[in-house]
Length: 394
Image 1: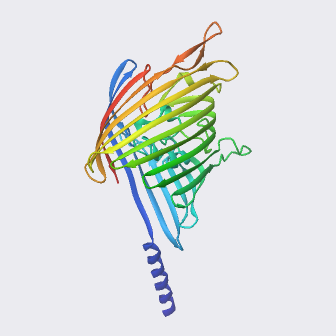
Image 2: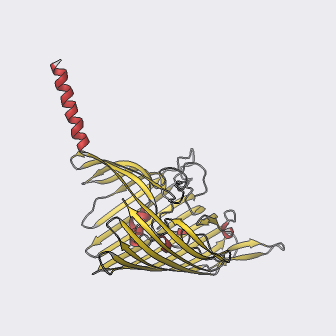
Image 3: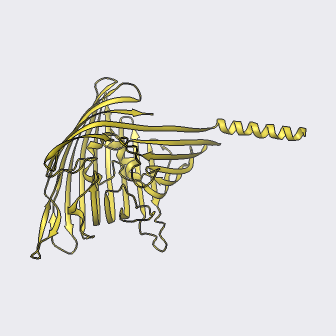
């Protein structure tokens, strides 16, 4: 009996010790604002919007110390609409849902739904996404996923430790398709380097049959703006800090072949609904900057020129859509976790965005329209949006 009590005491002490070396953290970001947007069917609108500047989400992350510099880690993260409390996309944990191991010698290996290398290595250098966090600055249709429109399912992801400022990582998303290993898969690689005030990043992403699958393939996501046979995105970026200012440059190229559909702000574009016959190319050239007037007050700005090309498979028909997007914002911190903001964006679109058949057997062209990120597309080539809001991080 005495040995039983001793054994129970030892096990209890071990459980307490293990519990003391484990942690679970609740975190998130809540963003709500009033938005004015013009040119929706020839009229303007006032909207109470969720996530105009930063994505709204909550999550749980945890870690258990396994000894010798090794930890078991997990993250469960959900994006949602603060206006009505509904989940975003196709599942509860629609942003991240993974478990893995992290070593201070060998890097981090994780399994589950995760963001690709574009989000890890390029988005932090942009005015949108993980960078300045202003969704209004997103590139048209978030064609390069810098704004984290979607994440990759069934993914295995690895990232090295920091080697004197250098990191390398990659992700592979399984299609989980019987007999169709490549149908619906995704993969990406990326790298970053930082030294003093300089940060550099580069990344590549490829997806097969993005957004067009109804199952649980890596590329099947209700959040995806594109449904296409093949999607490739790659780019490079850099930021440099001097005093209270940070200046950034980002270039990305998106190649979308066999386009079946495109949506932006919940509005589907009729110009992009030809069944697999359209190919879209975009080059996004972004200049961004931030300046801290005081520790609490910051000014943010960005300009992106997006040069596009739309062609029809098997026909000598090309369109050259272009977009100019300007974002200006000011942010005032009430505390370390809470801030208020005033932000605005202007976008001008030109060129044409696709083709349609005519009764005589010919074809016509869809005019390009402005489509500021997170908002419904405009009825013509110009759109202005402004928002004032409150953001709280926890």
